[in-house]
Amino acid sequence: MARVTPRPARPVNPRNLGKMSPITFLQETVSELRKSVWPSREETVRLTIVVIATAIAMGFFLGGLDRGLAALFTWLILS
Image (spheres, rainbow, N blue to C red):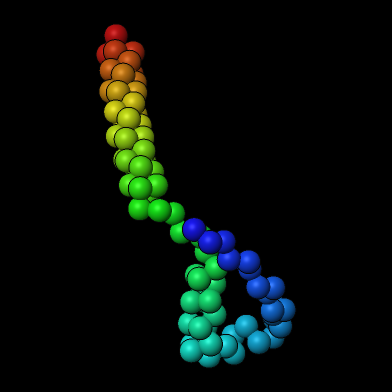
């Protein structure tokens, strides 16, 4: 994949921030998105699987911790 050399950013005048037209905003947004290096499909799938597996593992861990602490506090209060 070819690397794109970034163009130097234009200086932004703070007084003109609210005066940008929607068309100019969209053009600059597309320009910035074209500078991005997007991950490959394989990398995206692999990282998505890692995120889902981590979320499931953390769910089980936190669920178990919650059940354990609930049982502990119930035992402490009722005894």
